[in-house]
Each structure stands twice: as structure tokens, then as C-alpha cells.
Image 1 (cartoon, rainbow, N blue to C red):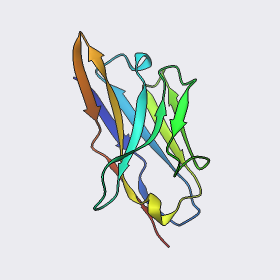
Image 2 (cartoon, rainbow, N blue to C red):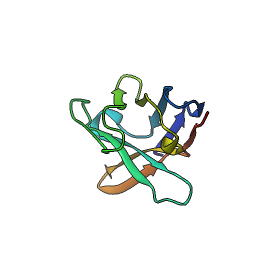
Image 3 (spheres, rainbow, N blue to C red):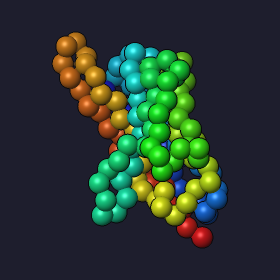
Image 4 (cartoon, one colour):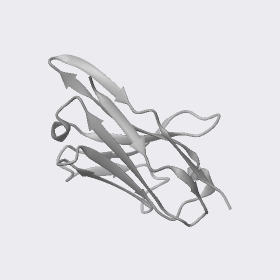
Length: 120
């Protein structure tokens, strides 16, 4: 059973930093790209960052480029999102995601989400 569990959210002041973690299980983590998404109240869920299976390729939404860093530790089945220079507009529920195929069947797995609130 594919499972993703996020942690690390919380309340932070503008300009502060947080690191989110997402621990994966139920699939061979090192074979799949991973992504972080977020959804603010009243808005659609949006892609924040993506990392390839080896960690050598990454991409970011323009709104977070230069402030957020996605990384992964394949030995720990964990993907991270280091968030710096946080802004109030970064307030959202953050989700990690993995999609692909297992035994020729497609899957699209999401974690339960972790709340990030940026406020003074």
C-alpha cells in the first residue's frame, strides 16, 4: 500500500524558515520522482516543486524559486522541502505527491497534508 506522511508544518513569522518532510512507504522510493504541492484557502492546489528520482533534477514554481529547496534521501525514503524567506502568501496546506505505475497499474498518491501558516 502506497503511503505518504508529511510533517514539519507550523506557524512561522514572515522571513522565517521551515523544513517539511515526507516519508514514503509501499513502493520503491528511489525509482520515482516526487513533488510538493500546496493549497491555500479558496484556491486550487498548485505544484510547488518537483525532484527526479535520483535528486539530480529539480524544478520550482516561479513563486518559490530561490526561496524553497526540494531534496531527497533515498536511503530514508524521504523527500524534504526547505522553505526560507517565508511570506504570508506561502500560507497553505502542503502535500507531497508521487504518481507512476506499480505492477503496470497507475497510482497517484497524496499525503494527508501539513499546515504552514506564515503570520506575524
